[in-house]
Length: 605
Image 1 (tube, rainbow, N blue to C red):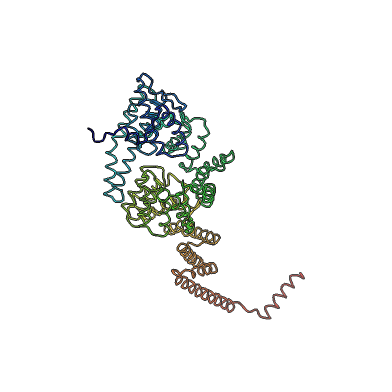
Image 2 (cartoon, one colour):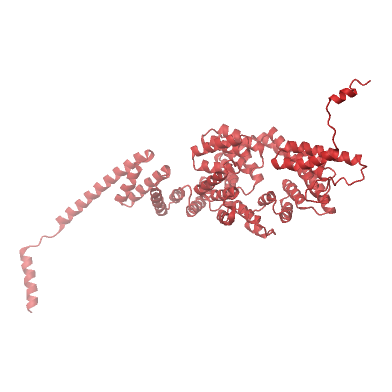
């Protein structure tokens, strides 16, 4: 006798409830949408699993002659469009929502068309990215050796992408891909570095499914010029306006982005945090930091628990050097979600402004382990490595950023700055030129070029760079001083003097003094006017030098020299005057009378 067998009385005591499988089927069909509505994903997954089992069970007990795809669940699409039964699709979708990508793809392994085919491929794609992140955590490229190891591993581990590309190519030969499948194909091609091939598939995606915003955002990364943007055959859809605004930020046309954002605000998107934060990014690109800050604060007022783009807000506060506001933002982000990607960036910026670079590196690294495909985080990490004098790691971080976005001028500039620090000026010159080409109206980049040219004794090129910096706005406020310094080395004293005069006038007008350049300019002009014997002007500039300890002694010498020259000049004038007095003839009375008589005689005649 089976030791686990039960008597009739024991079975009765179990209180097992008899039920009709058809009732269970109906109950689960109602429960799944309700659970989906309230976001209870684990309960929804369990119900989907039970529905799939009960569907298969009832089909087999009733003879199996019916169509398995017709399971009574109304998804408002046909079974052919779905590519599988509704219950199977919902179960796989529940696994997908819980990030069980391999499990999702396995249950949809027989799907070769429709939404089921897309979901399987997209699950496989995300599973590959997940494994890539896991490998990335194991070998973080914070040193040169780890960088090479991580890069080699990433380049060799593309077999999952190649398999996906092969399957999609084969499937497209038999039947055209729908919009969602085109999106997966475009992602695979982009990940493989085949950007020109990926572009038309992204365009096909947004034309077929214009509300798929992630496709528009991925398309932004492939636009490298305004001409290329306008050549795309995009659908005449309202989302295209948002896409154009996003592109204009990346193409360094912030004024066009701001215009589109304001137009969208006027037609009804005034409460859109996305539009406000996009506008803030445009203002940040255009160096209008106070306006960018206002947009971010407005977005936080509308949705105080939104962490999207808060990393950009923290960058703005960092540049504005608002320590207290950045500390408050970091604390609020930690309260909302401590281990969110954006939170790690905000906290990293907070530690950076405190000069705690080790902690900043720790948080930027944590952010990159969550999302290694975010170039701005790599750039921030590179900045911290530079501050920590880990130049090899900084170069690796900047190069990672460039691999993700070749149009990010900050990464090019960071590389140039790092190579300048380690005195590899030819490399620095190359990277500064790349940054300048992307943002020619940013005076910081032309200034950086001028400094490298000056270090390599290419003074005429340096002179042109400093003059351009002054013409485009001179954010740092010292371009004229550097221009004058180069002119002085080129023995062009007149131009140097005019430039220094304008520099001092501008600095005093702004009530901001760049002490090193200001003191040097005042000392130069004092000596210049002494040479020109313009002692009043020379005294004025020499007195300005007295404010600065590094040139105070030189200013005293100049003032003493002027005093001596003035005394000598006065003595010379007195001597000349006395000589004139002694050498002048003294008229006699007789000669005077004679002259009078002769004139009188002449008059009478």
